[in-house]
Image 1 (cartoon, rainbow, N blue to C red):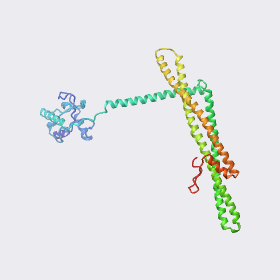
Image 2 (image 1 turned 135 degrees about the vertical axis):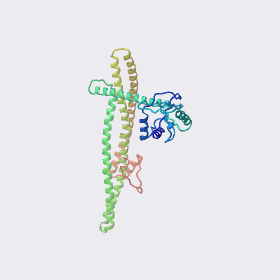
Image 3 (image 1 turned 90 degrees about the horizontal axis):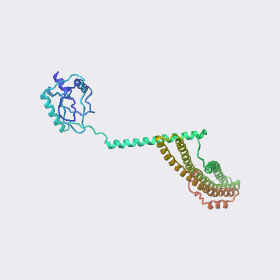
Image 4 (image 1 turned 45 degrees about the vertical axis):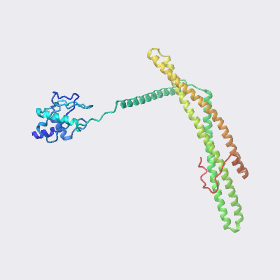
Length: 382
């Protein structure tokens, strides 16, 4: 029975206190329970421990955790277990022996230093980042609440909104113009699709006539005339397709890039206008309230936020006005050129004037694919 107790005691834990002396502390009444738990589930690796001796030691090596304190080590402090069960008292010789073993093992590698925690500076950085993110979310939530409240007030006719009549008229005109140009672009693409199918059919028909002119000696001349006519029409059709495709590409750039870029600035301006009115309304409500110390503090903050959003609103309003002006000038220049190209190309093709059709393409610097090159779809650039 004594040998069994000593074998279990060989794996006991000796806590390291901060003073390093072996004083008289309350005895650990739960030693047997702790030893049984260690033998069943293994030692607790999360605590700093000293293994006193090997397995199967003598009875003199039993030392309770509450009577011996090993020399202190930096950063290591393990609190003794609270008394729970009956204790086993060691002898004086065993105490001196285990104390010397604890000192020797402290100088060697028998003691395992606990893993150091994160540095204090790292914790401060993490805490600072968390606080910063929380402030961002808080400001976003307050701003969203104010803007939503202002928008609902405007929709239900309870709140006032800032209106620039001239600028609002120009913006609405731009949106209407974009819708109409999108309709023209859609129709021009449909024309390109249908005309491309017509040219392909003429090309196939010309090949069929040329083949029949060689295999039908009695109708060789008639088939030959029609083959030449279809080939000429196919050539002129490809030239017209080049002009129409250039027209479609230019309109697409104007509508989906130039106008869209201006409308993106308009959206930013409208958002800034809503924020400006929301903080203006908030400032007016605070101004009409009582003037105590807390209200004056909030009034100063509201005044500062209002001024910031007012500056942003005025800057975006100026940007929108400039972009609308440049867009109008660019639209007139582009459409003047493209409408002239479209008119001249269509007129020359249906009049059968091949020379004028080719001259139109040279005038607008439109180059067609070489006949030997692979012929992609005319809708590639769309």
